[in-house]
Image (cartoon, rainbow, N blue to C red; front, top):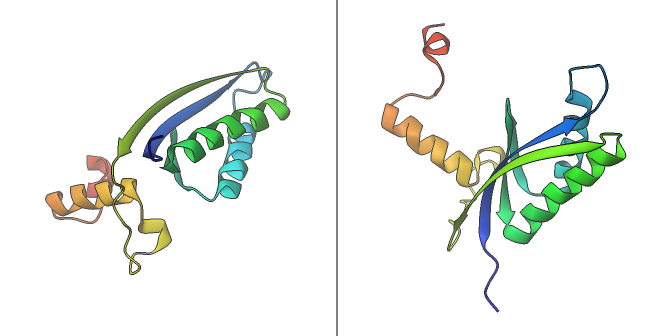
Length: 128
């Protein structure tokens, strides 16, 4: 049997058939509650969520988000998932705050280092 892979996922969960309200924020908040309980590193963004940890735990968390959103009343859910793996996972350093640790945070810091500035965003944000 092979060892557990470390997975970095980006997923976008889309509740379908939730009524006349175009907002799905209540459903996405329910998924956030599930991810909080999972103990995995995650970061929500405008069009999805970055999630990382052992492959089986990442897959289970996405499954649990589906179950919770269905339980909240969404009759259908479509989800796009992109998963990358790393073998072995990079160890996090104890001097790095939890919110700044993980594979996604490491990648962002590397891009910021290359660009030589703290903020990576659109030109409008840089000029503000």
